[in-house]
Image 1 (tube, rainbow, N blue to C red):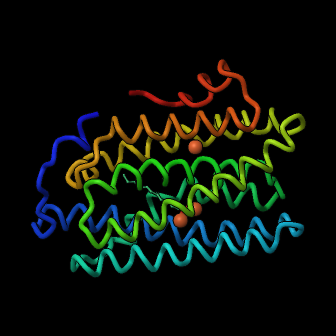
Image 2: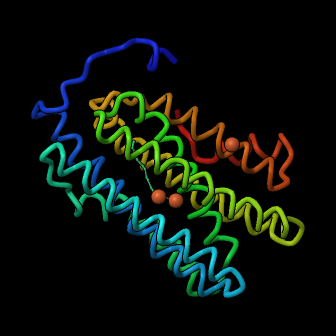
Length: 230
Ligand code: Y39
Ligand code: FE
Ligand code: FE
Ligand code: FE
């Protein structure tokens, strides 16, 4: 991955950069807003973790404010309609799972898939971000590891009776993420983020998480490539 080695100067004020940023910034703002409400809904399903989950939700709300400031700083108006559409499938799957009290699927969608997606995207973004956004994103990504950790720990403690449910939720939701990645490939590249780097980072993070939860290497390979048509 030459991305961090080649110091390519990026002009953050070109029309092309700001146009791509209007969609990526909106995705991140919408993602943070949905993560906020997902953690509040998880708190309803897991009242014994109400305090922890409320804390995570509040972090997501702070992230949203931070990224909103990043857009303003570049004089970009985020395309929120695009972003809502971008998340609609995952959003609707989370809501369906919530409606049936399916904690495992809700955790898989928010705390594993979406958090790993965020961690990959933010880590790839940091070296190519404008100085203002870089500072904000560095602070945010630290929190995302805590969110991922919450899901990992609970799922690890309930691995034996949730394994099948997790595999099924993975089969249903991971292909959606690969589709989402294809939808932003062109815009991400304008911001200096390569799709291959995003896929690689996601796979590493997601695979590591599945391993912590209890899946073996063979399961991890099968699960993390689910729906990936590279
Ligand atoms: O837990 C969180 O804070 C996650 C909601 C935020 C989602 C971030 C989604 C990032 C995708 C960006 C794609 C850029 C290539
Ligand atoms: Fe966040
Ligand atoms: Fe998060
Ligand atoms: Fe890790």
